[in-house]
Image (cartoon, helix red, strand yellow):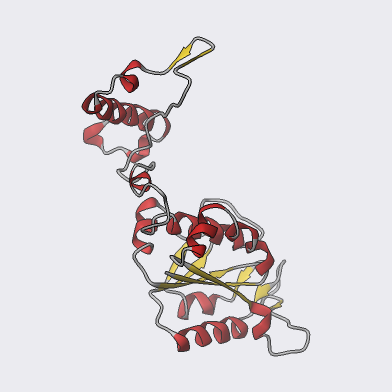
Length: 228
């Protein structure tokens, strides 16, 4: 999988992609991640990429021309399955959407900065918009890092135990059941006996029941009426 990220502040994305699962997946050749500095596509010597909004108001707006130049250059080199814009007013990222994106070969992610981007970019160049929550960040770079992490970990060969991703919260519409490790008893706090029984049928039954309880308590909105 190839991911191209267009950003006004590429340095914000260097560290998230040079550690842990993302780095290992890059080292294995499972994913390629390229950062594109929007200022490299500016038409003037000051590398300007933003300007004041028409009609007045606070903040600066990313200009359309550098963004179009960058996107067109990338599209001239390969076909892209999606051109994504990270925005707080877009549909919120879900596990289902991450699963869908993980099946693609090439995607572009455009990160907003300052007050946002010229609306014509969103109207004519973007194929999908994604938010990571109902709040505003200083820019879309951190949101892009969240999206990339959620997608890359699903790619075959990224996780040591490929069944691990399948048991994550939200994969089956439920939150995960509680998990425990050694010691079995600590400060009189004991691990549920069923997990020590070796009876895998009973363990799976317990995990499903606990996942239902956990979801009903913390995220009842995820449950369908017929299983509440």
